[in-house]
Amino acid sequence: MVPKRIGILIPSTNTSVEADFQRLLSDAVTVHSERLYIPDGTMTEAFLDLMNQDLQDKAALLATAKMDVIAYACTSGSFYRGAAWDEQVRDTIEQRTGVPCVTTSAAVSKAFQALDVRAVSVMTPYPDWTNQKLAQYYAAQGLDVKGVHGDARAAAEGHRAINDQDPAQIEQFAREHFDRDAQALFCSCTAWRSLECVAALEACLNVPVVTSNQATIWATLHAIGSLGMATPTGRLFGAQPAQ
Image (cartoon, rainbow, N blue to C red):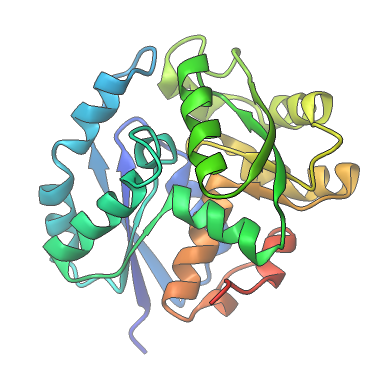
């Protein structure tokens, strides 16, 4: 049997997306990545613009390996230009490659729809400007964002270092900053190792926990009808996307 093939487009400094896909997927699905160059340092809109300038060519290169679906696996990279930007990214990739595309920001929105959640508390490793863009984006998607809390420790040595923060620190930060009037927790950023905290946080907070990589994996597998090919992680994996 030929395995299903998932292509992922990721920031060049990101080492967490591939690890999380590999952590959850069975041998019946393979993952193939292409990197979008982004400099290290303090994240800026200019850095994200630079990362996205080669999007079409990188997607086309990935598609030559005959992908069944392509995931654009960068949360901020798919929301920083506003509410419709993620759709533009998706359309750009699909038109260039002819392959269905999932973006992380849209996957998160679909995750909360599937969970019947409207009010969310958000944890990030982002600077303030990115947190503001995130709140604006998800408010435009119909979510009630109760708070966005950025852990300054994560990117203190540049955004590449986000990949190296101990998941125990992420879990503690989320426990301490969770907005109690929220229905769910969202841990944003595909470089943040928050997927490793999902079980502990759901048990502690007694609410669904959605992370960028978890939602991307869930939505990508649904797109190719292969959710059963993954290790269920969190309440999200028991939910079906809204039609």
